[in-house]
Length: 252
Image (cartoon, rainbow, N blue to C red):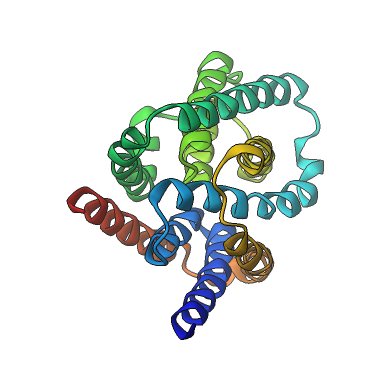
């Protein structure tokens, strides 16, 4: 009984930190995933529970940033469709493929998340950015969001980081508007995974009930103090944790 209370306290603390880190730097879900594994959950259960618990955090962000989505209906339409369809495919792959496939692939996905977070600025410099006055790279944008959403439906860790990286590379717009679109696409992906996983996946609802309010609270607090925190330091903290999880799951 005592150990169960310790696990609940850990989930509350990690949920709060996850929400705060998502608001400041992104990648907070990579903290929750190993915490759920530490409670003894199988990787598949930890993954779907993490995805369901993280979903509500996108609602507030998307609503608060809705004005920044105006003025680009074509971009919004194509990326929304890509996010919705890609997320459905990712969920289907997770649920129909054998569990052994997930156990084998997830360490690589966690490691990929860590690499992308660590080198996202370098990757952006390599690939370039649309020049001023250049139109959106619509085809590349749609394809990129589609595959990122498949990834997010299958394993949601660091999905926001991947989405914002694609948007920065393919769209010539302000970071504020790109971040709003990232939140909207994250909301679509989370809504899809929430519905699918809630209906037919092995979600641990006790953990979800502990994580949702603390994640939302952490996101609110993180948003308030985002300008005062070293986002780079937080990002690399998540990178180290994600890399450790990937190594642990590979050796386990």
